[in-house]
Image (cartoon, rainbow, N blue to C red; front, side, top):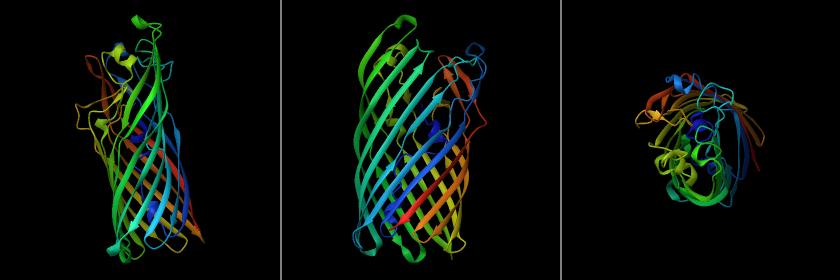
Length: 359
């Protein structure tokens, strides 16, 4: 299930703390639609011909509320969907994974408190509650059907920031802890030696920790440069149900052998008191592993370009943007067949909007 929708650039593991730095009391809601295209061509005739598009479109939602109590103390409540995957190989294709589906969903609420000290240094931190569930149907593996029920877990967020308002400078460094889940899991098999077998167990998993660095600075009147660097500890994250491990000789449904670093850089321009615009570039480094990706997540890094604009009227600000994502090429393997399938020339289009209001 790897980083299919993360590679599409919609979900960024690790909460952005930008809302903490909005003026006064503020609320926002956001939504995005991502339409990825991920497909590959088999290099081994016995495995079929083409995979077809395995990555359906999806929506994501977010929101937040920030309250200033005085010049020193403020707090925020944030909702986001930090991690997810959605894989769907059509059942009627000539490919060994025909009919395979996999879904991973998370949602989280984060409560943060920020204290601003003299010299424009601020410290912030809080608690994060995350809910996760997963399911997979893999006919190729003895007719496998696995469902991991929804489970909640707690983590924490810590960070610090420096600001210099006269030049619109801000640098914020945020650590998001790993979050442990224990999901009640039911697995069944309908083919092979395990036909009719049912396993009921608890699947333990820890979603990865991450470090986000967000920055901005004015470079000319009404012109802002901004960006971020995000590191995610993917190698500490896997989903390994008992039954699937027995059927595959100890393999995990989801696992990683490399971490990721994602870079974003943009420039924004205020045209007048009502309108402003921005252009952004993003890049995620390809994996430094053995060059092969999971058949449930055949992507390896990405780069993207996006444009956006915002309209401000009295206390309301409406922002919208669109991004084109070039998904990194990769190969997969099946047993001794390496490479088995080549995935290239894949892409995604993401569009979203945000409505903010100052009270």
